[in-house]
Length: 464
Image (cartoon, rainbow, N blue to C red):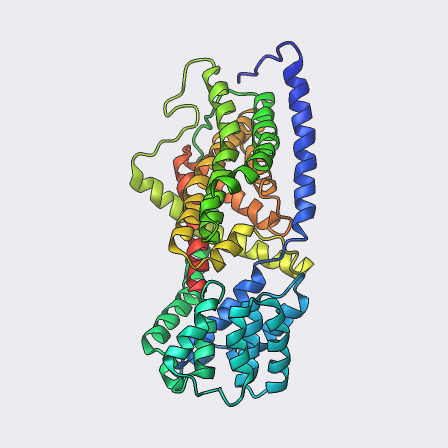
């Protein structure tokens, strides 16, 4: 293995300083993640909304399998708890949903109090709808044109589910608010959200058992581990210095600059935020990739077949099959790790903020930006660092187990989320195992992209 020369003494000192700063930044980020809300509450609310929307289209024999006993009541209780526990001002859309559900269930006193509190939070043009909802004589006597006028100021902030509740409450013909096509679509979404993960988990469990049996019988030999001829000093400068320290500096500098640059999109805040996420991630990638380019250029020959990073995209078919198979095997392990963490410590919060953005985005162009970051940029960049460089460097020095564990831990820490630390470490083990058994980086990128795609698709299905 090539160990870069210390030079005049500044490189080891710089590496030590980078390691110290990155440790402090990661520790601060992990502790700060406890203050971020968990996306699980939002996912539960969306699940209940989907059940309420799909309920009329579900055959009676399937309702016990797909629905809670009373999804509308469960949603009312969940919204009440969400607004009670929420830090900061309540979200107007959720507050309006709760008031409408309370009105439907006959709790008009509580609904009126909630609407009165909500009227203080919203601009004057949105209060027209609240005034109409508070007037018993106006309920069920609103024409279609009036309803559209009342809804117009809420379109930017309210969901389709809220629109349906408003329609059922105010329309002169509430039966027209229930669209059979939308009900059937909600049913298919509910089946996909509930049924597909269960099917994939069972399939993954079978593949995982087969893989373990092959390991026990020693029928799964690992190919030689190849990677860049770098030393621990190089990797420290790359990940601690380039990725963590310079990445944090870039984020601090680029944040206000990107906001100013994208100010023409202020009228479409979700699009603005989506492009800002893309720009910030590109800025984060730039320093470590530039450092890596210089480091690889200084590696001594000969370059191994497949290059220093061992991309090996072809043949693409086996790459895809290997990535999909390992992803399925990782599913039950990650799900099990999440279940254990939840049982031991409850919900620690700290979900990735991008999850909440995807869940609340109602703009296809904004979703496209989030998808590009999650499905293309993140897999390419993170796999290059953790499975392309860190794993083989550690593995060549201390063995494949050390490379597997070290790269998985660094991968989990890099997401600075204490609540997701264990599941992400398990996912990192799956990605590292794929790197070891395939002797290639391309399947890892594909598996990472497929994983993020499944997560993204689940969020979009729940959001509707």
